[in-house]
Image (cartoon, rainbow, N blue to C red; front, top):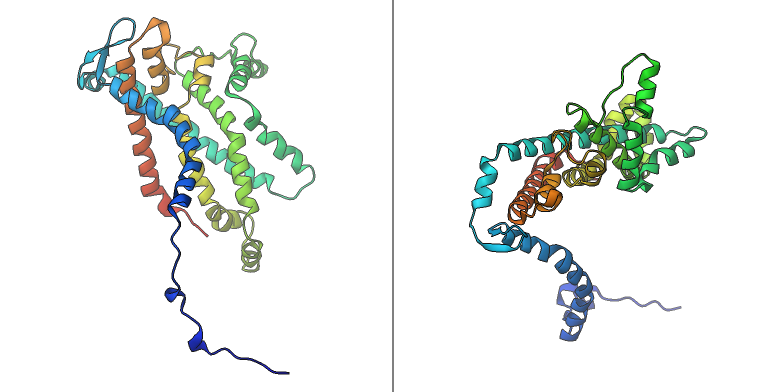
Length: 313
């Protein structure tokens, strides 16, 4: 038997191997694969965004047709409009009332549903089921529950001697009722994301923590939750954007009322542009640009401040 050896000096260095540049034909064919996606984005995102930006600097007649350049008039009006200021504050309050509770409740439930007990699959399916409901379906369900005369919630309160509550007719609690509906609607998706995160936690880390004496709440607080911070941060960003864009449940349950107490920024845009025969497309477009800026600023703050505390494995 003979053995052959290769001299290390005869093996070419990887940096010395010439790299073949892709041909122009290959480059063009790769760009062609992007054309369908770019076309969809151009038609449904880029063009509407550019059109809204242009309309925000234009006036319009009673039919909504552009009627000339008005400069920053709409934006100056927004700065001076106390009603718009109230809408903006109400929108921020709505985001706080939905994003924080839904993440906290979903995290607690996901930790409980991750326990190995009999029948846990049934509860996992039950708690994740809101993800399968559309906005319209969920809103109709809660409209029945919130009904002041025959609603389920008032029926339960009546058994304890508590008077009927105007869940969506009282200006002081209508926004909270819409927030409860939104929390229930988003909970299913959050549970799925957090459950996937719990399933990806390495077993060796859990075993090492148990050997060190960690268990119960200490295990959850010091090991599990830090490992879930990427999923929590993702839900924080997407949940904030979804709450800022909420429309369906507001339109079906309260139509922005009572007394404008549930009119958020998105619903105000709808009212200015389409509701009640309005056609103030210029002013509505200015509000839409403000909404875009709010989303960008809040998202940038989240990435700049909150992401620092995210633990990436």
